Image (cartoon, rainbow over all chains, first blue to last red; front, side):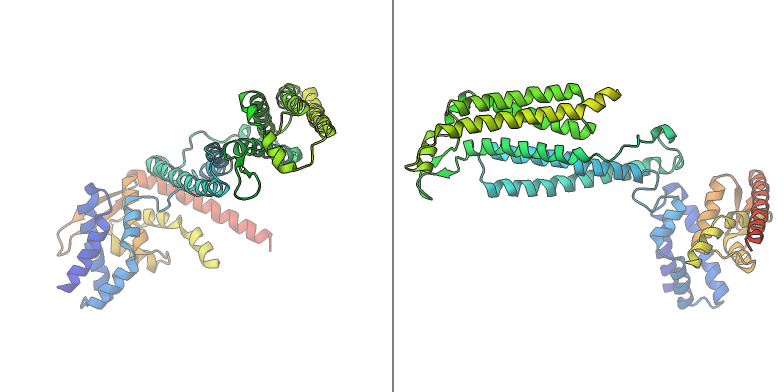
Length: 321
Length: 107
C-alpha cells in the first residue's frame, strides 16, 4: 500500500507542474516507467527498490521543468548581456541623480547634516534595491514570454555596425565629474546656510545666523545660483560627450559669467557676507577693503581661467568635425 | 573536468541514438536499457522528457499499448524523424572523419 502512495506522490508532484493537457498522459507513462524500473531491479518490488528508483529520478520539480521544456534559469544567456547593461546604467547614472535630488530637496527643506546624510544613504539603499528588483522581474517575465517561442531569435540580430567606436580613455572626464560635483555641493552649501542658518552668534547658545547677506535672496544670489547650475549641467554634458566643443564652451562661458560677474559685483559692494555674521565673527577686527578687492580679482581670474581652458580643450574637437 | 566535457560531448548523441533505435517501436524503460547496454549512457530523467520533446517536434510518433497488464507508451520514428536521422548520421560521419584527421595530424 505504502509503495503505491510513494510513487503516486512523486507522480503527482511532477504532473502538477506541467500544462494541464499533458498531465494524464505523462502521469500514466511515468507510473508505468517507474514500475518497470522497480520490477527490473527487484522482481519482488520492495519499498526499498522503489525508494532507490525515485531517488535516481531526482527532484520532481526539475523533472517537471524538463517535461514542460521550461527554462530553469531566471534570465537566460540571450537576455543576460542586456540585463547587465541596463542594470549598470541604472545604478551608476540614474541612482546617483535620484539620490542627489533627494539630498538637495532635504537641504532646501532646511534639514540638518545628519538628516541629509541619512536621506542620502536611505535613498541609495531603497531606490537601488527597487531598481534591481523591478528590472529583474521584468527581464524574468520577458525570458518566460519568449522562452518557448524561439529561444535563438533575438530582437535584432547583431551586426558589426553595433560595435561601439573605439575611444581612447577619457582623462579629462574625471576632472569634469569632480567639477560638477564640487559646484553642486557649492549650490547645496549656499542653500543650506540660508535655510538652516547654521552659524550661532556668540557661541553655542546664540542666535542662528546666515553666513551670507540675507538681502542677496531678493536679488543677486539668483543669477549666481543659476550660473552654478549651468556650470554643473555643462560639466555633466562634457562627461557624457567626452569633450568640449566650441559651442558648449561658449555656453560654459555664459554660465560662468552669469555666476562670476554678480558674485564679483556683490563682493565689490561688500554686500556678500551677512553684516551680523561679520560683526560676530570678526569681533573688534574690521575686514579691510583690500580683502574684497583681492576676492573680486580671484573670482574673475579663476572664472576666466576656467573658460579659457574649456575653449582650448574644444579646439581640436571642433577642427575634427 | 573530464566528466563535464564528456557530458557536453555526449549530449547531442542521445537524440541520434534514439532516432536510430526507434525504427522498431519501444517503450521508455526498454529503450533506456537498450541504450545503456549499447554504451550510450543516459538517465531516465533525461530520456523520458526527451522522448516527449522529440514527439512534439514531430520526429517520433507514439501509441499506447494496453494489451499487456501494464499499459505502456510505445514510441517510433516518424517519416520526418527518419529524414532528420539520415542528416544527423551524415553529420556524425563527417565529424568522426574530421576529428580522426585532426588527432592524427597533431600526433
